[in-house]
Amino acid sequence: MNKVKVQGERWFPSENSFSDELKDLWGDWYCDSEVGKLRSVLMHRPGKEVEGITEHNFSEYRFRAPMNPERARYQQEALADVYRNHGIDVHYVQNQRVDRPNAMFMRDLMLMTPEGAIVCRPAIPARRGEERAVAATLASLGVPIIKTINGDGYFEGASAMWINRETVIIGTGSRTNDSGARQVEAELQNIGVKNIIRTEIPYGSIHLDGYMNMVGENKLLVFPWHVGYDCAKKLMDLGIELIELHDIEELKQGMSMNFVALEPGKVVTPAGSPNTKALLESHGVEVLEVEMDEVMNGWGAIHCMTAFLKRDPVLPK
Ligand SMILES: NC(=[NH2+])NCCC[C@H](N)C(=O)O
Image (cartoon, rainbow, N blue to C red):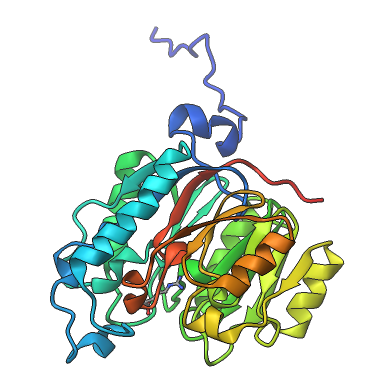
């Protein structure tokens, strides 16, 4: 008589959550804010792709002016040195395409979350495809990819801004459509984000970081004429202090809001915007400056070039 035996031991699933196991199984990656102490970033060193940007073609790539590759690399390296000097790990994208001059603006290609990265889908044809090398690099580092924007959606990382573990702003406009925004919202809800503030990005801007940026826990620098009233109201109701920057020349020409917080109350910012610097200092923010004029010819600066891989958590008030 052939007896099939039930094996003595049962194989039970682990009831641990993904985030309980993230550190052990993948690595120490996390981001739920723009200001929690910065530990690790992903950048792309401008390679061959920026060597052919001239007077004749710069606007095709949505650059502001031709770019001197050597100077741009030098300025990016100076920024990376500031990060390294603050104990931040700087990782670089591997094997990026050589026909995508905007690839250095890493912010737009991924959005880090507490459980891993969302790989974006850039909106403009001149950028589409940059995300593939980013996905491969994330995989090789061991950063989980929790979502890749697909279907008819497009979404760029700078269309979202973390306020704290429970709150994220998402802006739709020329770089993020409703489908892209909904895909991101679904992922954020899945990992416990409670307040998603949807807002419209004005015609004259492409990303949220063109007119808002966090400088400390519960402290947001804004250009008040761009922030929708409903968005501002929701933020204030959540206890977020809005600091108003009024200098449109510094904001647009000097990209003075395009900074990265190294920790709450300490930012590294493009040099040359004294009014913004004074405003930040008057709110107790320490400001480090780095020359960025060459990089700015690509119409991006410090915040645009820096994707976060790890920040310390920031819990809601
Ligand atoms: N996060 C940002 N603000 N990125 C700016 C990207 C600039 C780039 N030339 C583009 O049009 O895509």
